[in-house]
Image (cartoon, rainbow, N blue to C red; front, side):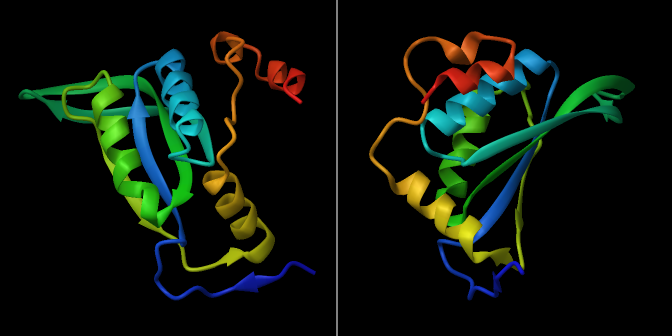
Length: 138
């Protein structure tokens, strides 16, 4: 049985930060840099097909949706990081609160993001296209 806890609105609450990128390469770079700088615990991405107006013309493009998991206390820094590193002139960045998270996950997020140790080594693994290369880091 999983344990769940309702948290009062606090800075340790888990939030999700969403953005969209035009390429998988940019998505990966934003993900790795955010995690390496301990602004996020994770980044998930998936392809999306977008339709929107831009400068008076309808656009229809394939993009990548990114969802970052982080603590509420770090969300403003993460948003600023995404805005500064993003290739779009006006990137979409949305922060969504969560109502409930399981206690073991919340504790793991807190311990990992507050740990002084680096998460990713300097051996260039973030430039590799195969996510399984992370298994080499132990």
